[in-house]
Picture 1 (tube, rainbow, N blue to C red):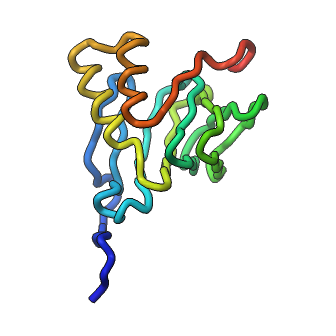
Picture 2 (cartoon, helix red, strand yellow; picture 1 turned 30 degrees about the vertical axis):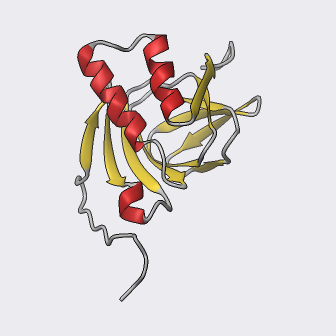
Picture 3 (cartoon, one colour; picture 1 turned 135 degrees about the vertical axis):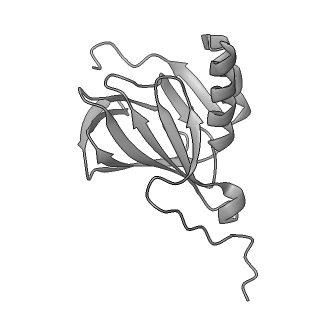
Length: 157
C-alpha cells in the first residue's frame, strides 16, 4: 500500500473531461487532485491561427508535446516552429505565447506542479456567459498565478 495522495488514472483514447472554450476544446487528462499535486495534463484541439497573448505562469512550468499540426512558439524573443513530435519546456516565470499554424493542431499540455485546470474551467464558464473581455480574462488569469503581459510581438505570425 502506498502513502501517496495520487490516484491511479486510466483513460482510453478520446476520454477525459471536456472543457468547451468556444473556438476549441480541451480535454482534462489528469488534475492535481489525481496526481498528488505533481502535475496536471490537458489535451488541446485548436483551430488554425489560434493563440493566447504573451503570458507568464508564476507558479508552474509548462510543457507542450505536439501531437498533430504545427505551433509557432514565442519564447525569449524568438519564434520556434514546432511540428508533430516536438517537445517544448518552459520554466515558471518565463514570458511565452504561441500560435497554431495553418491547419488545426493538437497538443498535450503539462503543468508542474499541477496548475491551470481551474483557469480553463473558469474561462469556459465566462465564455458561456459572454464575459470574455480582456479585463475578465486577466482577472481569471490572476487567480491562477498567470500574468497576461500583452499581445505577441509584431511580426509574430
